Amino acid sequence: MKILVAITAASGAIYARQLIDMLLASPRVEQVGLVLSSHAGEVACWEGVGLPDDRRIVRFGNDDLFAPPASGSARWEAMAVCPCTVGTLGRIACGTGQTLIERAADVMLKERRRLVLVVRETPLSLIHLRNMTALTEAGAVVLPASPSFYSRPADIEDLCRTVTERVLALLGIETQGYEWGTTRPGEKVGGKTED
Image (tube, rainbow, N blue to C red; front, side, top):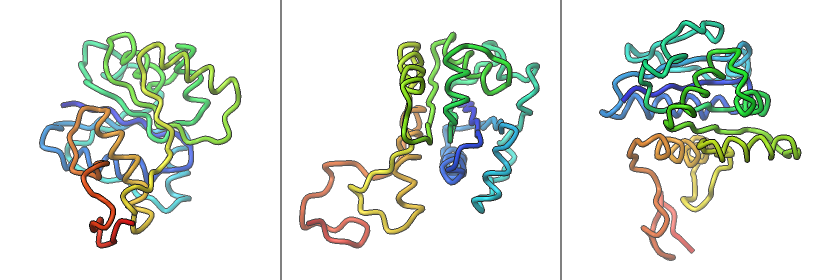
């Protein structure tokens, strides 16, 4: 599979790093396309998050509208914007396509391919919600970066992984993450006993 990952300047670069690591760990993924918005790298640096480097990662400039992900004929199979600012979400919802991130997301929608937007914003205004509705109606999946606690995460990495594992599943990649209903109260999960 060829998966495109776009990183915007929302807080939560850890999600992007985990997602890329998990994609690279999958034998099904042959190539990861990577596009950063103009300030995404600064936010990742501020948060102390380094992005992986691997021969299967192909980087594209966000201002390069001649890059392969700008065309449906390039056959990228799925795309995640992780994390996704509400500004990027709004521009994708409007179909402006002025950057590679926006155009590639537009390609995913028009080609009926998987598009997952990992929104990292709270609270949400009515404008944000309407944009999310428009994107959902167009076929995208809006996945707020809201970690779950069912698995009793031991640290921040585990907690954030509850989000990135969901993104991975929505992109069509199997993962061995936590699955609800596989344990019962009193059973051990991650070294801890379920109540």
